[in-house]
Image (cartoon, rainbow, N blue to C red; front, top):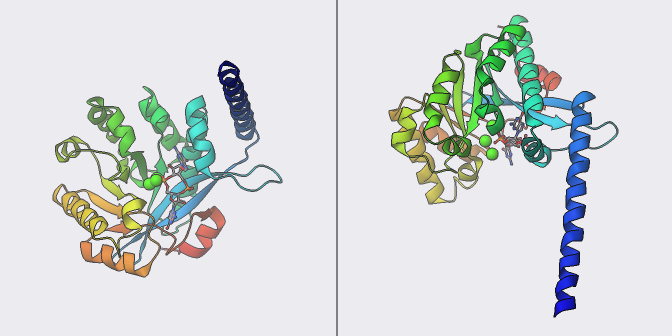
Length: 277
Ligand code: C2E
Ligand code: CA
Ligand code: CA
Ligand code: CA
């Protein structure tokens, strides 16, 4: 039994070592990728449920290593968050997305607002307000055209401080959205204290909207609650016309999803979705 135990232990450390070195490798590669500008921002259209009008876009980062396949954020954002690299990366995405939005607006194109994801590490930083102000100033994007997405779980982690942190961000004049809404456990009373402009219904509730009565009930409740609190609602992950029709019936204001388009490069977004005013 003893030798077996040692053996198991041996395997375990070997796995851990391999795991750790893969991580280290990825971290090194991420650092280099930032320096060598291997990240790209894609844009997914956000549309009005009622009439299909373009409301703006969500900025979503991709990693394009030279000569390799594109790497999805699901693979590197968690590591960027653990290593703190999310701070320079997140700031880069924000600056790039704001620069792009302002370029479209000043070219006279009918672009609404730009949504950018703010990670927990960014949100918690004392100087996040100063960073945001600087980026808005540098890019010239009016604060009212920027929407920051903060996940529900990120907000809940901040406990009592969350409301004050959101208030500080709101003072900049931008809009705030709660991302992945419904996956955490925020209470109604809590929500009311938050200076929130939008709830984004998580894709997991939208997926089976047409077949699952519970998901339909949840989506209906979120829309009704948001309306009562005068918060707008956006559904994510809308893939079918029947999902969209149900969202229209519920009174959901906006949506994004493959039904219209996946996230696409800036040039494609411009060609497909932007028109002169
Ligand atoms: P998220 O913020 O919830 O973004 C929505 C994700 O759903 C995106 O995945 C988008 O491509 C995908 N999506 C949109 N419509 C559909 C649909 O109809 N069907 C399906 N199956 N998927 C759809 P993506 O771009 O792979 O990003 C994954 C996550 O990575 C994001 O989830 C976000 O949490 C994170 N992320 C991406 N870019 C950034 C960033 O710049 N900063 C931070 N902090 N996180 C980011
Ligand atoms: Ca998001
Ligand atoms: Ca989301
Ligand atoms: Ca999500």
